[in-house]
Image 1 (cartoon, helix red, strand yellow):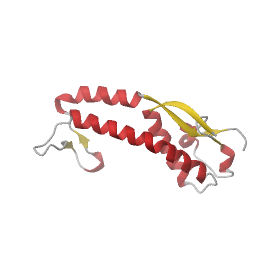
Image 2: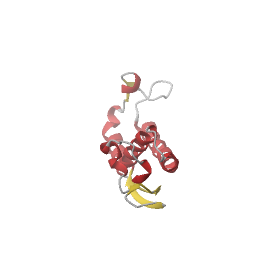
Image 3: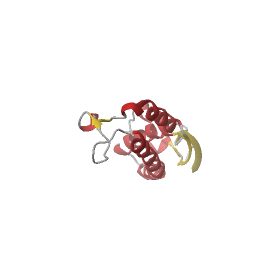
Image 4: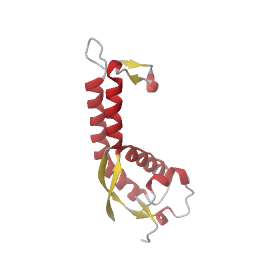
Length: 134
């Protein structure tokens, strides 16, 4: 069953993590999880594009026009220099932007006897996971 929900981008990132956690478990809900992962992909791609436009607009750049990074590896952060406050303002607006997502709801009974971490699935309770029966 599809159901449109209003969620903020920051919530969508948490929902994605929850779906990834569940998809790593060996459950009979693989179809329902896959359907929801597919549904949010487009929204996440739009979010990534918006994030990249903030970086492109406000990041300090090297001589070749690439954003300057502070640190190395996964811990590296974009150097926004004098534009840091403005970039943070746009970033917060993007994270708090509300979007409409047509999640595919399904009953938690699809997980059967699988032991799940309550904290990991909390973001999708009542949004995707319901107490409805098949």
